[in-house]
Length: 101
Image (cartoon, rainbow, N blue to C red):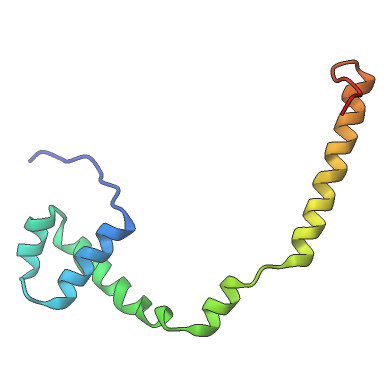
């Protein structure tokens, strides 16, 4: 028996296979042959899709993901600006950067 290299499938491919399995038009063995994936993998993807289907319609989670923590981002911008100014001053003193800007 020859071993195939481990495949990394995209999320789109996994969703396509899982949806085909959920339709139930074809047997698991047929889908495995069609998509060149092990039947156990198809079952796993199908289960994961069924478990995660509710999150597609969860509006509260979508809102939370859309929100940006502005305060934290502004703090990070300030920190990076300070760092850049410090490094610029150090490079000018070392003669590696001209003072013209």
